[in-house]
Length: 372
Ligand code: MRU
Image (cartoon, protein in one colour):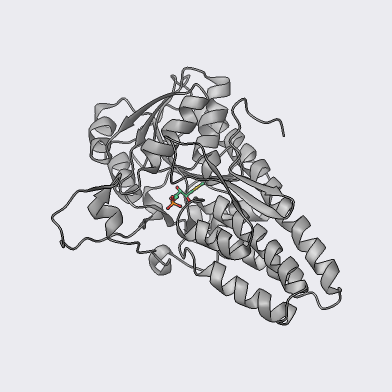
């Protein structure tokens, strides 16, 4: 794939080590950290040096390739060591299914008793790099399918609909939440992938990004990516989303996903659910963008998606400054679940699923291309 003009190097495999752009420091510092052991990659995932569902999956796959090389010459048994590494990596961030998916993909290699240890080590490195490449290609496909859908002007938010079937679409004004961009993937992005593809065809597209408290992924990361790409972007506080959705200015909401249940219920960054309800109230189409590997067909609905709880200090402190009275309690669920009924479309790397989302997702998973 041709890289974009400001391609972000989120995760790099350099001579058996993993180099990550440190997302905790952006946008003020562009610093790269190199992880020399799989345990360092695990810490980087836990501490959100690397974050975003697909990026976490790629980093975990590379960590397993590092663990395999270490285990091949270590004192513990090869499979025992990789079993332990899998468990540690799996526990780093519970909500995004891409992490478990990538570990499962790597497990299919290291469990192959028909191959020598060295063959499995080499194959794991190749598989990790393949997962990385596939993720960039997936994002490009999501971008194209999503741009087709948006620019066709045929989306309606709900039964009453806000779409203008058949009418030429105006330059879109897109609201997004959190960061589902190149930084959250191996490159190009899911929600931002669609925005990039729309921008390539309609340079007049504009973006409003929620700042996304507590860790400000929208203000720090989405704004940074879009500014680098010359895509018009304005940051708003999370509480302003309803105001702008009601104003009629926003034509579409596009967000990423950390896990999509079989019926289409979608876990994404905390605050997404509120945006979805406000979008429906104001007849604005609400689009989820994610590779099919984010779908968890083992979960019938979103009620059993594990929601990560992070430290209260992420809420009580912001940018190194205490925001609340010392000692006050705080809650910090990192994700919420948007019921499928609020979702106008799920755009995957294999095509777009339209309501009813359960059967449509299964159809998209079963065939390549188009809209189901
Ligand atoms: O806690 P984060 O920053 O990892 O949360 C990220 C999100 O919620 C993204 O929207 C999601 O992972 C999709 S990324 C393509």
